[in-house]
Length: 421
Image 1 (cartoon, rainbow, N blue to C red):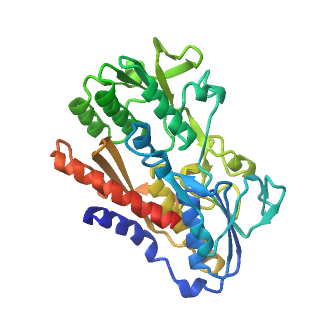
Image 2: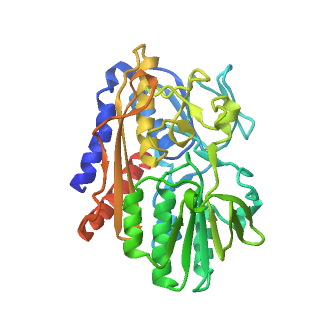
Image 3: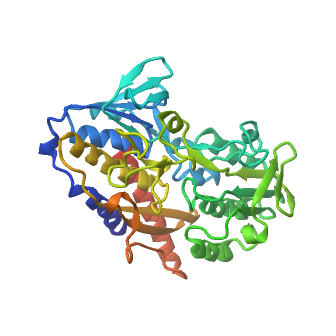
């Protein structure tokens, strides 16, 4: 493995290793139920069973495989296959985790039960929710469930990813694609800008008379100077970004007319990618762990909900700012959460720790940039650690950007192997 990515993965591991005492947890008997089979849920279930081999650990996830959002922008731009984004959950069985292929329909926090769409009910002593996001249908006027077929969001990887790719391929050379980016918070803060980079690269290679216009509801975003540098270098004729100050906020869409409306303008698109406002998945409302923001407040040390006892929320659904909603965050949060649950169930007090996040973004199919953050959770709240982390250097040689792209590949292989086996 590349030495740079190794250091980052080791740094993430150090956040949890000091808390692990397997001998103290080995005889712990409990019913641990995990909802969601992504980077957070699969890792949380696997870690909980490893720490507490005598516990009954059940993962509730209707799919037999998980489709990864990280690296899906490479699929949209035609340089990666969608099937390469699919990761089987079958290895969880050999790890001792019971996989129930059903959907969690309801949660009774008082009775500590989860009701499935099959009608069955599972009892739990501790529940880990890692359900990801839902889209706020109607929060952007005109963008509802029917509109996603004409104006795909592709913010949940799978059929939508393929649809956006096919629409882009079918667009005539000389056409205009428009992307709408919402205000924060949303899943994967730099994701829209990586997507814009890779789509612009596709247009430059395959449809050189075409253009991508990015309409953004904000003026600042993750790794902005590095993205702007890459766009000016690689895509001056193929990508135009408009922030909120430049009338970039989309207030209404008309999917039938393929029209996007801002405060002062209307744009027609041949292809439109609408990334709408988001919230924690609906099951969090049923569990009573989402607040008025639509997201889930938690204790930062244990990830236990501040609204309902014995329910822990990790990954995209949790309010963990300044830690971003990312696969790396979900994976590490799952490990820390499982450790803290093991401590509590074994009669030990939870302990504060340090957490990190690393995020790679492609600017071309073979060049990438990155950002690393480090966080404290002392006192039950997340705080950035001053002087820790950082971003890729500006004006770097192409060899540096290519090295980071290779590190991204190593990182993705490592995190998918760790999460899904």
